[in-house]
Amino acid sequence: TTVLVLNGPNLGRLGKRQPEIYGTTTHAELVGLCVQWGHELGLDVQVRQTNHEGRLLDWLNEAADFAVPVVLNAAAWTHYSLALFDACAQLTAPLVEVHISDPKARPEEFRHTSVVEPHALTTIAGRGVEGYRDALAALAAALS
Ligand code: DQA
Image 1: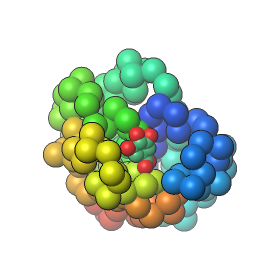
Image 2: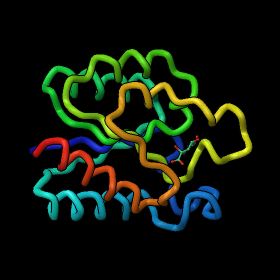
Image 3: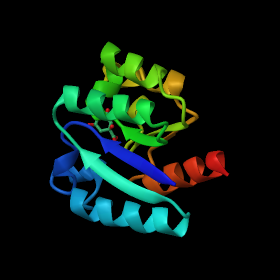
């Protein structure tokens, strides 16, 4: 089964960006880890990252067209994008929300809401990049 791991804005700078919050694993390393973790779970993982909201919406529309399961870290869009809410609402295959940090435990109020959560099978947060492994495992379990 092919699954998509979609990463939103600023996650391309993983490893350099606020490492005290997001850790030192780079996005390129995360791609390798997700592919490997997926392989162990029998999933064919494709990882994508964008800083452009419309591109993420296009990918989600494509996932809707082909009923592709998705692991989504929409980063800051998580907290305010109504277009993202609508894009997630139409998905028919399982969607798992992931965050490296735990947004609900952070001081900024704006991080405490998620437009993805209502549509997600489960939300994995605060486990660092390992959370992607848990997210892929949750997808694999839902698909089996
Ligand atoms: C994040 C949490 C968001 O609040 C933040 O805007 C991000 C990353 C995370 O993975 O912890 O960019 O989604």
